[in-house]
Amino acid sequence: MESAPNADMPGDVLVVEDDPIISLYFEDTILGFGARTVRTAANVARALELIAERAPDFALLDVGLVRGEKTFAIAERLDALKVPFAFVTGYGADIRLPDSLAGKPRLTKPCSSETLEAALRNEL
View 1 (cartoon, rainbow, N blue to C red):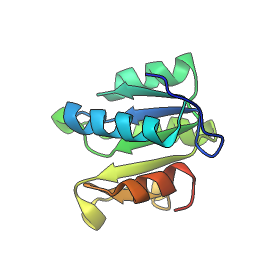
View 2 (view 1 turned 60 degrees about the vertical axis):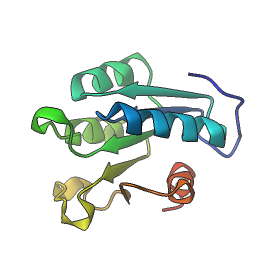
View 3 (view 1 turned 180 degrees about the horizontal axis):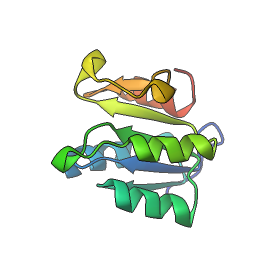
View 4 (view 1 turned 135 degrees about the vertical axis):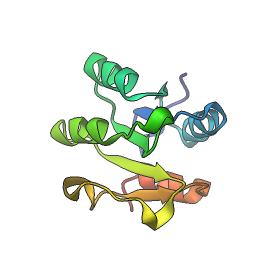
């Protein structure tokens, strides 16, 4: 989906979220901030396909997806491409990330629009 661009926001945001309601919330909110496009994926394979087609300017990654899938492979690919991203989790501080990703920004679900906006501006 496309919106009117805002120079302070990443132009193209990838949202990896398996809950369609949460995904739609993120999409609408991020477009409202002025991101040009938001692409969504509900699983690791689709997210990696979207990244291969075009690397995003920023990504928001739900840590745990359905069937026990984790988004760590996506995070490592984005890290290799130097694309900023933040993890989103309903598990709070209890979630264990691989050592190579432990310092990446984390948002706790539900997160406020202010926190989401700060993450997109790389202010976390």
